[in-house]
Amino acid sequence: MDNLDREILETKTGETPAEKIKRLFGKEGITNNYAKHMLTGIRLYINERNKSNPNYYRNQESFGFKADGTREYTRDVILSDSEAADPATVMRKMGFDPLMWELIDCKLTKGNWDTTIKDKNNEAYTKTNYSYRVSIKVRPLGGSQITTDALLKAIQSVDMNNITQHIAKDSNYSYPDPYMLELPILDVHLGKLSWNEETHGGDYDLKIAGDDFSFTINDLIDKVTLANYQPEEIVFPIGQDFFHFDNPFVQTTGGTQLDSDTRWQKMYRKGIELLIEATESLRKIAPLYIYWVPGNHDMVLSYAAAITLQSVYAQSENVIVDASPTPRKYHLFGKCLIGYAHGREEGKRIETIMQLETPEAWAASEFREMHLGDLHHEETREEGGITFRRISSITAPDAWHTEKAYSGAVRRAPAFIWSKNRGLEAMFYSTITKEDFHYEDDK
Image (cartoon, rainbow, N blue to C red; front, side, top):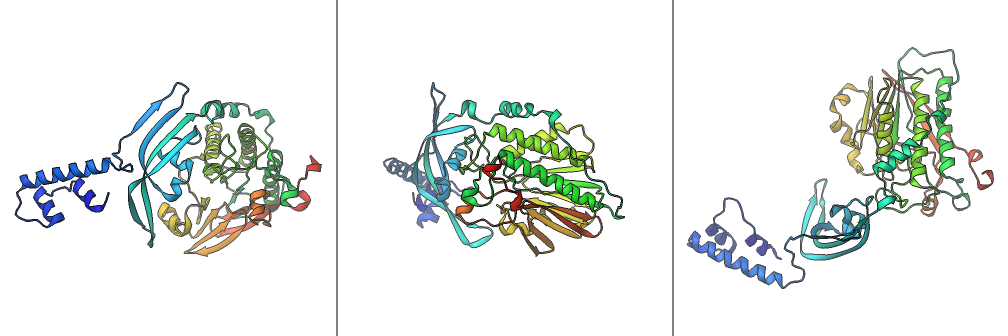
């Protein structure tokens, strides 16, 4: 269908038939009634002509339900080239959650019109979307899906009596200025499987990841306590690829296949135990603020974990869990404003998003930082009055990172001490050294 066909078929508000004939064909002096008949005839011709074209779509939907639970849908969908190549995206466009439905068959037939748009942030860049007739056949995942009941069973299996609290070492000196402790233990990738002989970064599995996470939390608490800092409050961001995968098929939220040594139920249960253990240790020191920030690996399960913590500590006066669905979170402490994002989707827009999303806190602050995850190594830069920090990770490299040569990063996690009036006061690190690496012989 060309542009003239679309112009004829579309109705322009406030334009008479005679005006339309004049605009499209340059014919003047035609009455509205005659012009109306002309347009009707032309539209009938266009429709009949296009019906003989196998790529002609009439925006009709069809669907069917089978006795075995499968469903078949046919619908016209607008897709870019990259979207058309991604089955998970096609499923979502058709209204099916890839976590809840299994794709049996999918057929895409490109239509006869396209739409080209300009990127608002880059006028030189254009994007073309195409019409597709999509026929899809799906069935529910059944007992293997991550359902609310399955999550509840995993939560109920956590033995609260076995949750341990770390007792921080005592100290005699205290600093006069109010302080805040921040513990961004990001990109843990609980459930990842790594083999040292393949990666040279130590073995990594569910048990090792849990041990490393607990060691890191306790090590940082001890270092902060021995330095005599007594924080007024603690910030503990969670999510940020805390879990390695997000569905029963050991895939990321977006459908990337991964390596793991465990089932999602065991991973989720262990994650809840670790987060409660850390919360119990931290809340004994000072009031605790927990912020959920989604990662690209674990958007569903980390959100479920945040909701679980919110429920567990609903009646607690010194634990506040922010599980709101916004992808970025902000915390204001005196003159210090710290933002959290995974840092994968924002691009250069991350440089101005803090001012737009939290203008009042921006105005009240003097020291501003954005703490980002995703890359597993440390980077720091300043731009527009904000320090941007990529936070390092304690996770071991897996086969994919080794193949792509994304290796060599120091496995460590930081703790930040913030002065209410003077900004960042101190940093501590907990490092997983080669002497701490786990190997198959150790198990």
